[in-house]
Length: 178
Figure 1 (cartoon, rainbow, N blue to C red):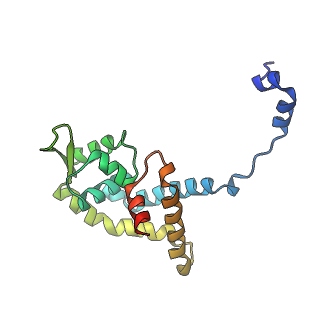
Figure 2 (tube, one colour):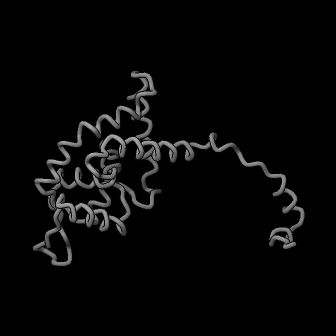
Figure 3 (cartoon, rainbow, N blue to C red):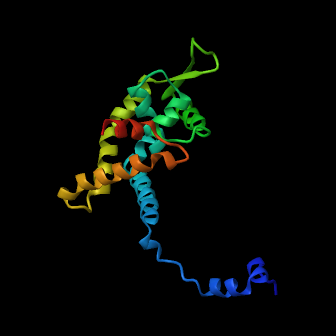
């Protein structure tokens, strides 16, 4: 039988570790936040199934439609997505004819993004489904608590956004406005 490195170094600590009982996951806010994210994605995908877009693709299309000509790196910061993987999101949108990349006249290394007419039409058609998904997420809460819940989530995001692997400029802009 193998002896763990901890048991070899400190048999007393090893015995204490064997008696350790972790807290219930339900006592951690991170557990609930992760579960809520999983549920939110599932509800979004169910409601928008006919459009074939993920939440990240929808966010990318929406952000670029609001700010045409944005570059990939800025888009990633706008939606709080990892800059190393935003390219593959754009690849999929471009392959479907929903977004295009154009070379920046100021810097040929930079690709500027714009949403195609097909992409704008998809966003417009999907909006009722996206709104329905958002409503479904809040349905379990009494109407009078929904705004408070949204406000509290926004505070947590704003106050902790810099801790994320991919901070969002949206959260930073909202924090500055407060």
